[in-house]
Length: 399
Image 1 (cartoon, one colour):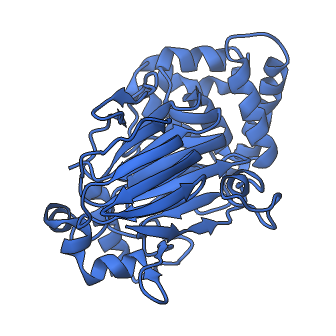
Image 2 (cartoon, rainbow, N blue to C red):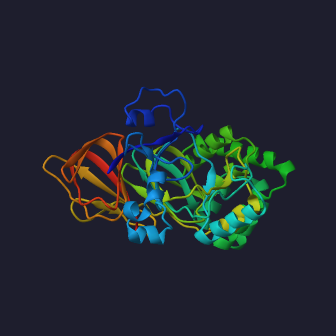
Image 3 (tube, helix red, strand yellow):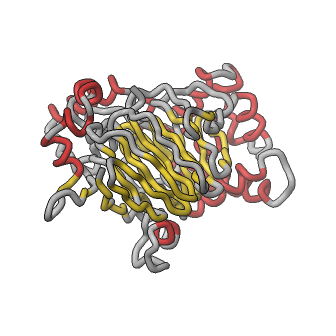
């Protein structure tokens, strides 16, 4: 088992307090701190303290994949750690985005390679040939846009704005109030003539500002649209955001995002567990590249409410968030004095102490896990025991 030194991604939407407080560092931090990456992704692998100088977790695993991952995981995922674990701290909204399926990622990655696009090219969509299903679990109240709302509710929201100019945009949804109509409406929005786009967004935002000042069914949705519009004036993604479910997660609640789900995180702190990929297709509310044809090809337009997940009690004080994904499995331990779970081993693991403190004991060795620290447990390590008083998240393979 190895304590991890992890990379912090300084994206502009990050917080200058949340991750610093988690890690026991001075606040405010010198720069925005958006994501703490725990894993072996080539873009920002964690480092382990094994040996005199230490090495990256990616190097450690590639040097001995069967030992570090176990035979089953190593063979199934080509000798790579199949998941990436993060803590996300959003001070301002992220872009509207979705992630491809495995088949779409493989095809897109090969296609862009054949075109000679550099991996770092700003107009490249596929950075690797992997999909990116993800599970997000709130550590604080956490707001997100997630998946397309029911068609009748979307019509009710836009009708509440009282704008006759929206009739052409809403016509496909009135004709077909289902996933097909949602797709046609979103396509109409994303392909709206560029010379008329700014006027449309401005008119919608003006109506949203009026609606947000009075009591009503969609007041919070309208308020969030105004916020996005202030950050991204003229961006059609601001109007597209009004087609999505607004979700507020309380600490401990989670959402699972499969391929094709259009979403945006609006604010809060959460842990994220995902397949080991960085493939993102953006749909707006960003200065970065938006490939509309590719986005429309990848999106899943099924519409309806979002299912909120809570951890289901499992064995030995472990509570598990159920997902259908082979690459990862997220669970949690709420430790207290007198409780010493010895969880069943599931191949490679990363443990994160999110609150309080913990101790991990294995074969006579004990590692202290203060708040914010994380540890990699190799498949070759034996059974271990957890003790302490706090909250520990456990990332493992879903096999």
